[in-house]
Length: 281
Image (tube, rainbow, N blue to C red; front, side, top):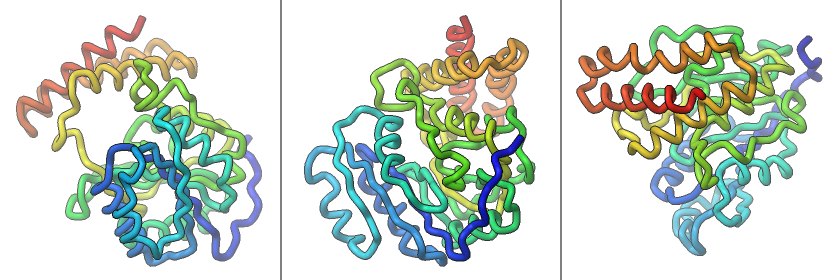
């Protein structure tokens, strides 16, 4: 039974919770896109895990943005986001990646969709690699539990605060922990939210994020992604059939991606298959 939600405020406040380390130009691009938002009622809570002074000049260029900066030691993205969640009090909670950026109307569209679907506690947008690339074939509307694994990273997740009160990120999952599980924190959080509330996806909510087709992850990163995915599936009790599908999926895509995007992308898919298979048991 979905959690009942109160009426959304007429002019809801967004809290944008951003954990960052080692990205200056990318964060600058995100802040520039936030300055250009058609919807202005938002705050930025920034978990800065960088060496002292690393972001100072860039942040000075964006002094007009409502940024609260919290300096933290580098303990991983999940720990940083949990610190930010303790201070998040807005109507809508968002977790932009520090290397993503928004279309000018992204926040405005989120407001529209939450107002249109008052029983919905979580919205998913659609990400592409640039404003010039449009997603095709994306299923819109209510998202199933299995559908949460398709293009649903934290950068496209938007939550009503009441729907996720008390939910925290798993500190074992995500980049920067020093543990083998280099991804999965985003889907883990979304799965807990899905158990409470209706989740919907709409393509008009546009987010941009670099694609692995353009920036091939290292073999070590692919291994950590695979370990995180398989740990996540076991943690949430998915069936062996669904786990098998997750293992075989990159293998099936490998020849097609090699033809469409080159051998490097095909090799990426094959490495993902091998690592998921290795982490199944």
